[in-house]
Structure formats: structure tokens, C-alpha cells
Length: 275
Image (cartoon, rainbow, N blue to C red):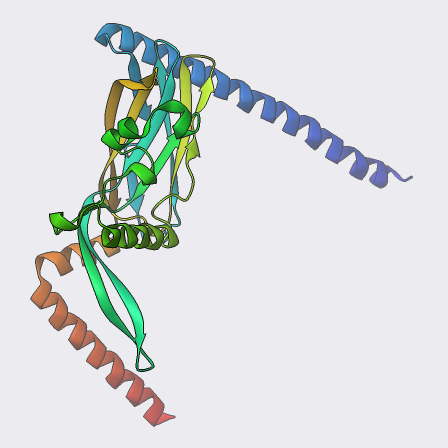
């Protein structure tokens, strides 16, 4: 083996030792960070007399042109053993669900149902299965889990009917297909008996607005403490300027879009004509 070969074969070992040291240092920093956060939350809880304290790693998600999604860490502490559930809801919006049927060989909208104040985004997490935490009435009261989320039809007389059930399922299915309603609960991990954390993931098509993140502490099947934390999802950059202009000056935005389209078509025609 030449000196060059020996030198080449020893470098990866050095890199591996460096990587192990770096990984160990990162793990140590993470542990210290969690302990520091836990200690701070416990001091806050003691000062405020609260049995549950929670916070986010960030209270703002910036949506730019190259946005591909984001993750936010929720962490907190409790003063006594219990179960923790987290519900993330986007700004409410009115939604119309339509049902298509094949008529004379053509798919047509035959039925529809309007819903009021539907969360534009919905995700929930818990440290145990919901059925092991509380009974259905308690979960429905706090909207924990898709099966317990109240989606009200605009026509109050239809609530609870078979038609409402069918369109409600279709609404949830459409939201899940779009990736803005969770298909399964996320996991809340306890670090010991008092500290907990979970990661909230947002897709690239996350709706903008103010989100409400509700953290609930359950004991003996009942909610004994709760905390709501806001999260802002805002557009930034040129896309935000265009979006704001389209909302505030709809007529001018429409006219500008027509002018740009006409100019683009004329330009393309001139280019192809020269060729």
C-alpha cells in the first residue's frame, strides 16, 4: 500500500469520529434545550398557577413563491400526570360540497350542501388513542378528532340527517385528498411525566390566515385545563403583493390581467410570424 493509499484510507475514519462527536454534541444540546424549556415552562406555570403551559417554536409561517411546507414544534409541561391532545384549526370558511351524477352520458352536479364555518385546515394529535382518553360527548364538546368535529350545514334543519352525514363525509374526504385535513392523528410524546412535545406539519398548499392551536389536558376522562395559542400563516414577497392587490382592487386586477394576456398573445404571434 502506498503512502497515498494509506492517507486516503484513514480520512473516512477521521470523518466518522468527527461525525460521531458532532452527533453527540447535537444530542447533548437538544437535551439541554429541552430541559431548559421545561424548566422555564415550569417556572411560568408556578408563577401563573396553571396546570398546563404550552408554546410553539415559531408563531409565524412565511409562505413565499418557493414554499414547500413547514414544521412547527409544539412543546409544553403539565403539573400532574394526564393525557394531552392538540387540535390545530385553520381560519373558518364557508364551503359548498357538490355531488355529481352521470345523466345522459354527462357528469352533472345534481345535489349540493353548504357548510358554515368549516376549518380550512385541521390536524389533531394525542399521546394515546382518543377512545382511551375520553368519551365521545367530551371529545365532541371540544372538537377533538375528525369524527367529533362539528361541521354545521347552512340549513340547520339538515343537521344530523342522512344527507348531512353523506355530504359531511365527502367534505372531509375532499379536504384529506387536498392534504389539509389529517388522515391519522399525530403523536404527542412525553419526555418524562411532565414535559411533552409534538411536531405540526403544514403542506405546501396550506391556507393562509390566523390558526388556533388548542392544547387540552385530560384527567379521568375530563378536560381539566386548556390553552389556545395563535399561529399566523402569511404570504410574503411579490406573490403577497399580487394577492393583496387582487383582493383590494379586483376591477383593476382583472383589467391588468386582460391587458397582460393580450400583450402576451400579441408578442407570441409576432415571434412566430418572423419565423
